[in-house]
Image 1 (tube, rainbow, N blue to C red):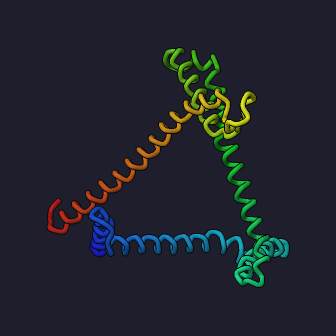
Image 2 (tube, rainbow, N blue to C red):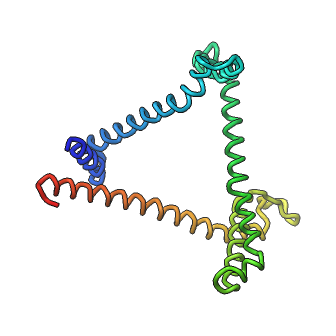
Image 3 (cartoon, rainbow, N blue to C red):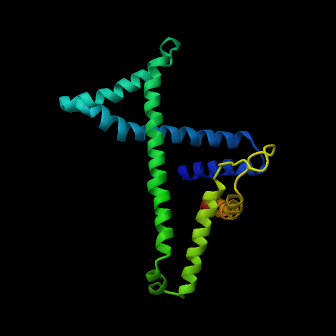
Length: 227
């Protein structure tokens, strides 16, 4: 009953934003952010800091303790860099974090998105799949062509290379005509993709709101003895 009342109050506080920004909505939002930050802190300490930092220092071998000294030195450098006289010390851990983040991001984009997308486009033009897959072959061919046009058009949209026309030195540089045309086609595919993403996010939020409204109705019904 207590947790049901708390959930009811917090749900009503969040839904009160529908009539405008108010104190109750801000209180519930701050509470959510605070609880989330505390929960993430506990998870980090329990699953990262304790097993990979404190345990090797306490019960690990000399080899494990030497490896722990590296992140310890980087962490101390970040703390010391908060003082203006020692701000230069923080460049090393920041550079390490920036390089590591860039490597992970680029590696994930290349091996997780670009290469699988190229492989899917190439495999879509496999004649064996056209005739072995259920359905008519011309439908598979049309799907492959649409996929190829979408990939080429989207990549052309993000092509920012400019070229100055040879017959005119006064006009501003512009992209080649072919790239411009393919870029216009890519805008259509990008618009469809963003629309699908927005529809998915909106439908998820709408389902969450419906679930909370049903929770309020069910709780009030149980509170007054209904079913």
